[in-house]
Length: 331
Image (cartoon, rainbow, N blue to C red; front, top):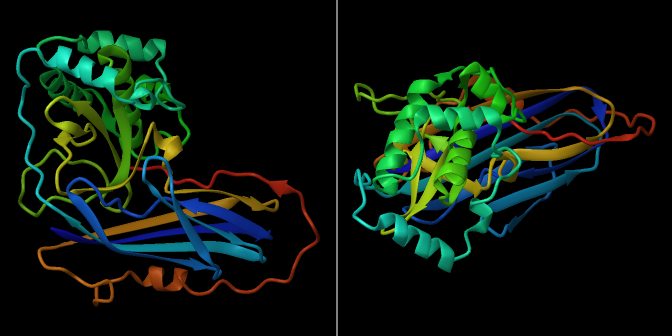
C-alpha cells in the first residue's frame, strides 16, 4: 500500500517575534516493512532547511528564521510505501522468557529498559499493574496481547483531556487520555513489570476502509503514537493500545524513542514576548498504485491560505529571549 501524507502545522503569534529556531520530526522512516519514497518540507517565512539523522536513525529537519514574523507555517509532504505486515501469533513457545532474557543480556537495549521523562513508574501506575495482574506468566507475547486489550478497555479516549507535557498520572487518575498517554503508560508497565525493551513510536494511522469492523477511536486528522516491544523470534513488534490493534500496514512510522520527549513533531524556541496559537492538520491518503505528490488531491481552502508567505513586519525594539517548546500533542 502507498500513502500520500500532508502534515500542516501553523504557529500564530499574538505579537511579532524576531526569530524562530525549530526542529521537526515528520520524515517517515525507511526500515522494516516501510520505505519513504519522497519527502519535502515547506516553511513560511522562507528559509533554508537542514537535516541530520540521530542515533536511532530518525530523520530530523531543522531551520532558523532570523526575521520578524507573526506566524510560522510548516507543510510536510511525503510518499510512503508499506508492505503487508503479518499478524503476530498469539503466543510464543516454551522457554521464550529465558530466551528473551538471553537476547536482552547479549545486546544493547538499556535505553528502552530504563525509566524516561514520560515513562516513569508512579504509585498510581503500580496500582494499575496490580489491577491488571500484570506479571511474567505463560509467554511474553500472550501477556502483551492481554495487556493491549486491557489498556483499551480500561481507558476512555478523550481528546484535550491531557497536554503534550502531562505526566502519566493525569490519565491514570481520569482513566482517560489520548494515544500519547496510553503509549506512555503501556511502555512504563512493560519496562517495569515485564522487564522487556519497549520504545515509543510516533507516526500516522491511516483509517480503516469503510465498512471494515475495527476498534479504532483515534482522530483521523492528527498524528498518532503506539509502542514496540522486542521479542524473541519476532524482533520489534508493535501494539496500539488506543485502538486495540497490533501495528499493521496502516501504521506509518516517523520516529522512535524512549518517549514523546525524544520524538515530538515540532520542537523549538522563539525570541520575543508573545503567546502563540497552534493549528495542526493531517491528511493520510491511501492508494494501491504509486501516487504523485503533485496529483490533484482535494486540499481544504484554509490550507491554501496558511501556506501564503507571511507578511513582512517592521523590526520592533530588542526584546528578551524566551524559550518555548513548540510541540503538538498526538491524538
